[in-house]
Amino acid sequence: MKVLIISSNTLLAAPSGPVYLAGAARQAGHEVQIYDRLFAVDLAAELTARLTDFQPDVIGISIRLVFGDEIDLGAPLGTRHTDLRPRVKEIVDIIRQVSPARIVLGGPGFNYYAREWLEYLDLDYGIRGEGEEAFPLFLKQLSEGGDICSVPGCLYRKGGDFSAIPPCPVQDLDSQALPAYDLLDWQPYAGRKITPAIFTKRGCAFSCTYCPYSKLEGKRYRLKSPQRLLAEARHILQYT
Image 1 (cartoon, one colour):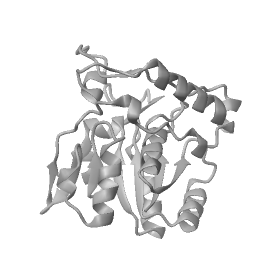
Image 2: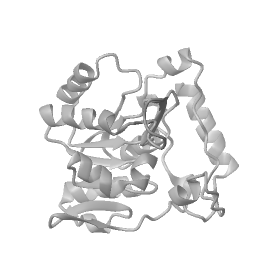
Image 3: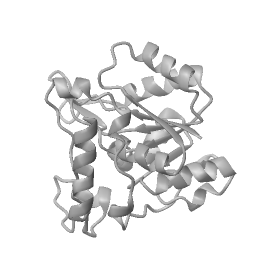
């Protein structure tokens, strides 16, 4: 299948989830591209051109945040951070105008408000939790007409409501595909001295009120081996 991963992030930071998902989908045999919204000059024109040229079968939209850093001092307390949902809706509206591709949501910002996101955008599919294993399985089930309810973390529309499958954390981090930084245009990031991140572990046993990681990645601590980290570092050095 042709798979387009869209990074909807508008925060000046390197994408992480999209490149890991793209690597996983490519390793599973799919043709994959990444569209990075962050540096878009004309979003509608650029995304329309990419959709028309690539003709994806499935589009994964990565949602990093729900609220932005911009502050509206005139808004009531508790509502002053910028609502980023309209920016994602803009992407979905453009897709619907030019492409019949299936759309699936994911990312940290989706995890916390999964049902609300699908209702707001009138979409049928989303994946909560870590996606390196769940997303390729989702693609496999779609392409083969299989049962979506077997996909860990999948939230899908069924009979006018949504059914949810519990997420399943990736156990063997070393066996996962390398992040597909080669599919990104890194020049805009390099020009702003932004560096990619290397994640050495997943999970956290603590439940700090200010931190989302135990909910995003689970409480079981999982480490990458030194060999895996060196492979990621070499890959990043080669393509960024």
